[in-house]
Length: 77
Image (tube, rainbow, N blue to C red; front, side, top):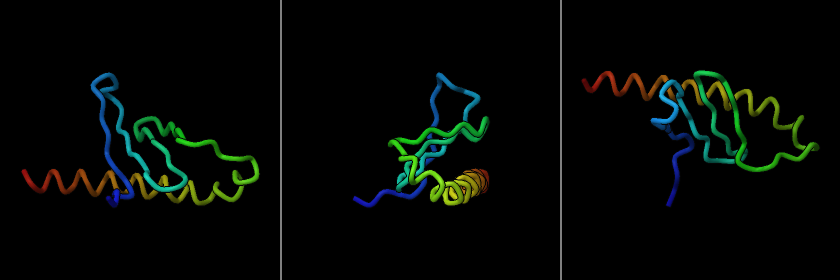
């Protein structure tokens, strides 16, 4: 099965949160309402610098993905 690169997630225990899940390495969940970021796997110190710019770009992509999905939902109404 091929997974989408980004997924939206919600949870009634966190009604104010907007979660976007990135399913490829480096896998993470970001709460767009607070910009909190949680990686799924340990990132080695040696990889941190290499992934910093990539992660910043992925966060921008996650936000754009969310905006696109919300726009699609509102167009259907």
